[in-house]
Image (cartoon, rainbow, N blue to C red; front, side):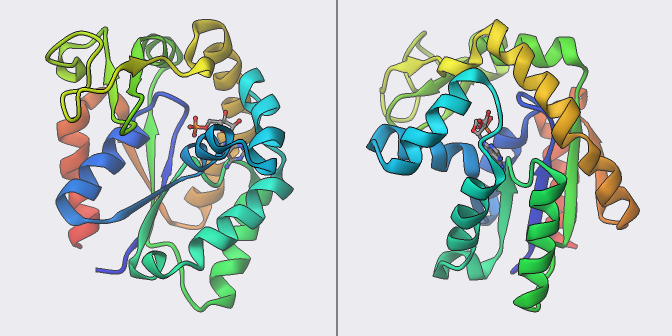
Length: 218
Ligand code: AMP
């Protein structure tokens, strides 16, 4: 199973949750550009220092900083067995660059999965999101389905749960505006290419994972 997917949707739409389930069940590699940037920030790399100022403001990191990083990640051995791109592409420029890179290597994306969620729900989900400071697993303190067994503690490794600095309500609103302006046009881009599968993000993680599984197993 060497399939390649793009998970498309606003912040808080459930891309990461879907990816986590697919990694657990099918072993598909999740490539999250946000996670890669956060790791670079934590490690204090030159890239992390540049990216942090944009991330803290809820803006997109400039395309030129993203494209080399993704090209490098996709060239690594583990990515030759397929992957899910989570949080990339986020602009038309990034999508076109990806098309070109894949064309060069004679491969293609199998499907683009678009999670559609209303703005109010996105803000609510993002504000309640907490991440394990050790393994990065995502929880939601406002939703019993995604709450940890013990408040503030990761079910998997006992790590402390923290809020991402850009998950505050104020920054989240700006990130959703950025999504609508710069990333949402990709829905039409991939629809026209006949690659888009739209999922109703309000249908719940279980139902949407069933639908995603059907694409993975097709
Ligand atoms: P995420 O975890 O996907 O919400 O990403 C967190 C932040 O990382 C975003 O708000 C951006 O600042 C940055 N980022 C992640 N992926 C990209 C991308 N493909 N293009 C530009 N900026 C990105």
